[in-house]
Length: 85
Image 1 (cartoon, rainbow, N blue to C red):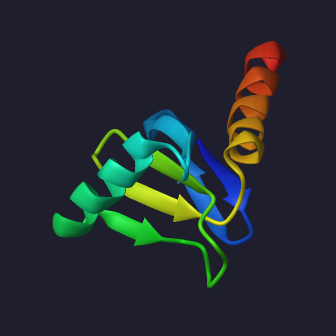
Image 2 (cartoon, rainbow, N blue to C red):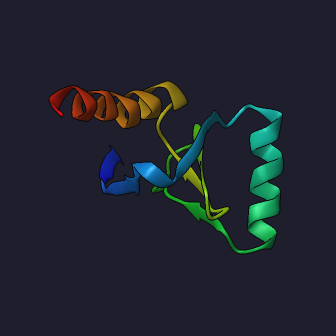
């Protein structure tokens, strides 16, 4: 199921493996590795990068939203879906 995490950015929730703050040292290492392998997508639209989404395919998505807000949007909808079933 695709979830809108920021304006104009939709992510398949089932493929998200991690949402990390950009200040985390692990996020910095992932960004460097992904940029060399052409698996990094800059989705900040000119804003300062604040969070990173890591997918199961190894792609790294840079977002201009804070990690807490992205997590809320992704997992809030997941909880609502489970309750409706």
